[in-house]
Length: 202
Image 1 (cartoon, rainbow, N blue to C red):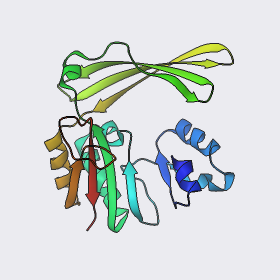
Image 2: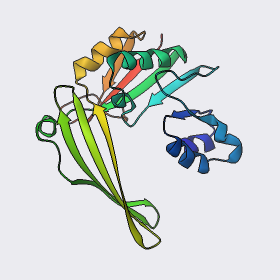
Image 3: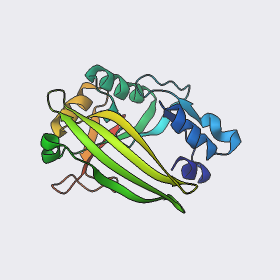
């Protein structure tokens, strides 16, 4: 997505807390553009310039467990926006059945991640209802030069309910926001799988 936006003429910058992920992205970018992506955290990232649009997709906010850090992150984004700028982030809508019982070895991806390269991802979750966390275990299996390789990856996600998200945003410097049901702009309804939070700096 980053490379496509850059190729289309967008003046785009990116941050990540994972050196490995940044390394993968930089290999996909022209060498003279790799400085556009830096190792930084949404809570305290710094840029000299401000932006018209900042997005935090793929559950970025859900990786922040501490409520004070969540607020710091949102306010940090606010301070990096131009007047009239937009901040968009997403969280999934909690599945109450999965929160109670968890998931056990559910295959959520089985296909090609690049032409000719297959990947299978299996997910197991261990809910922590007291601390409002989902502890996730991903098992990855892929073929590399005819050899099947595996790797496991564990991390917690802090899940949010709708009005909790509203209270969080209303505690921040943003005074204008809405929550919609998907990235196509459809309204939130019973079929929605995600909360898409669109905040405006007015």
